Image (cartoon, rainbow, N blue to C red):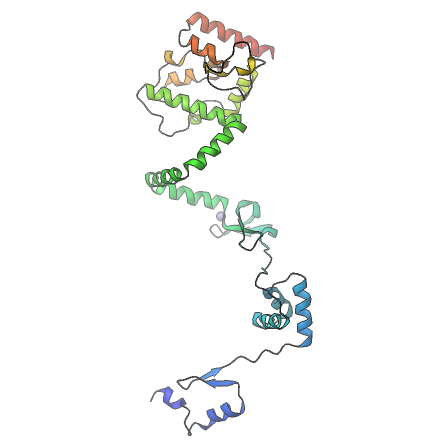
Length: 319
Ligand SMILES: [Zn+2]
């Protein structure tokens, strides 16, 4: 016989009926089972006072419950009685007070700075700070693994994503070009190399030229600055435009990156070529009047090249 029938509230099931009539706490469900109901919440004066106090201190229901050692329901009931709204109270985040944390992947206890931190604006105001469960090293490994798992696919996804973000990226690059000379330099050099390779029916293929030169971007920047003429600055690094150039007004002048031995004398089809190395060696570069650069073009004789290089050597020795 199934239990259901055993427990059915018939006149024979006297103990159950008794509990129903005299204890009042347990109820019968429709199929005859006993359902235990929680005890009715009866807040004491003390608790009500304490809740009001803590609420005024900015505590939320969860924290008040923890303080008073009662359930959250209990606190919410009291708040309802008092007409207090705890819905907009959040438990204060303690994450940002942590000083160290165990990484979920390598299981090593590391200082909190070894974890990436995310900041998000909360819907109800304020900022939510969350700390990643994996340390930066593990994250790097994971990203690398994902990347090399299918390079073509990752790149394709990135390209698609960039397409939709193009406007945003353009604006970012424009702003950064104005404020960061090293960035501007990098962009321009990269473009020059791309053009030269394209001219020689090759392509740069999204590979950074920084992997193929023997100096850093910062070195290049400082080197060019050391050869600046008084009117030159990173603001007037650019190309010659006939319409804006005024021979009598230095403020309209521009300078460009000049290859002392011209690029056309040193054709290269890859950044691994010897000609590339000679062309982009620091000694072959200088900041130069953009107009003269265009006019002199590629008609520089070997004697002139040697002369310019000697001048630069002396100029740098003097500094
Ligand atoms: Zn780790």
